[in-house]
Length: 130
Image (cartoon, rainbow, N blue to C red; front, side, top):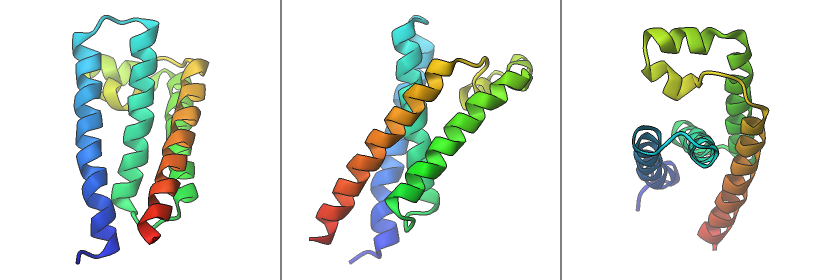
């Protein structure tokens, strides 16, 4: 039997790859609308959550959610500096990680998404223990 950390990392890694692929498709292939912006925010928050699971699978679920939420909000607030927009103009992939311009709606979407991910993860962990 695999150690718990590996058992947690494997599905998180697969899900993270899927989320990133879907995010790239949304970004590259769909028109820029409010719906695709929100979808991108949901996928970004999900990717942040899954990345924390990959890095520290043994953390309590609430800690994982807290770290992911703080990351997402910090990145959004960092956009107020104008640096992500400037850096993204020089190297476009930066925009995928740091965004471009501040939008308060993004913070709401991030927090709600992380809350849903945290609740789902807590339920999965609970069922794992049975």
